[in-house]
Length: 96
Image 1 (cartoon, rainbow, N blue to C red):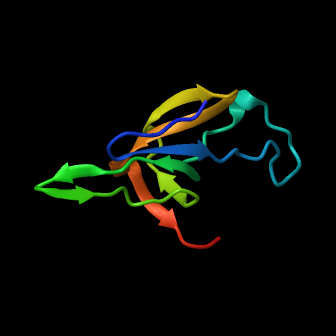
Image 2: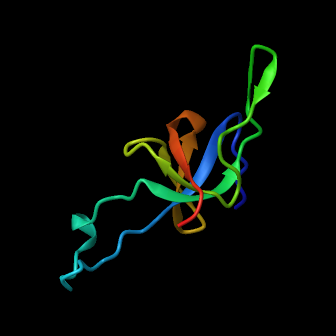
């Protein structure tokens, strides 16, 4: 399935937290916290405001940090993706 976000929405694939601590202890899925970072897969065209088109702050392929409880999780082709509003993106990661 192919998704194209509308307005200023952004489709993100959330990063997966490592399943093991630095000390080597394996963590079950229920003990892992959801990461607040990920990769942008698709971006909507933007939203009109006072006669101007305001584009989202990120582009396809960007790595972003977003609010912890933001967005809506959706299942696409057996992957869990996150559909965010542009205002929920708090930073674009320049280089890691």
